[in-house]
Image 1 (cartoon, rainbow, N blue to C red):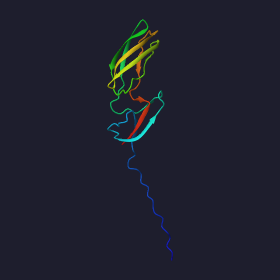
Image 2 (tube, one colour; image 1 turned 90 degrees about the horizontal axis):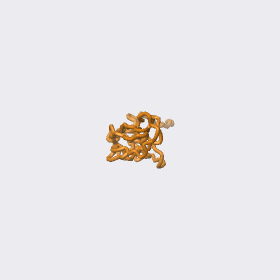
Image 3 (spheres, rainbow, N blue to C red; image 1 turned 120 degrees about the horizontal axis):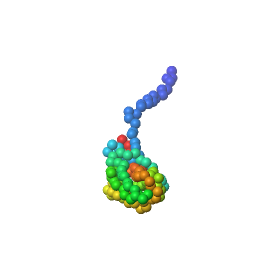
Length: 144
């Protein structure tokens, strides 16, 4: 009598935990995501993407004054933190145009906003928009 051959049983078990990964803007992972996988995404030099913010990144805040239709002063309310390069700064609203502003970053914080050109036609105080500190042209994958 010949016995039927038995097929090994394959038991699938659900993963007890799914890895939690985030793309971060720093190659050294935050302690909440300690295992660096080595994966990264790079974009062309002028392209940027937003990586998740974990840790000490904080948006800087400023206000400005105008005189004779031009921005004549910018005052830092909060220096922010986590800036690895000079972020884009622009004046939004207020009826004016052509303002050119430049941020100065020291030790990850906005220490000054230089007025390269105060613009023209401002009849109301514009909002000074500063690019987020976690915008970069490369992100790194960290998992826990």
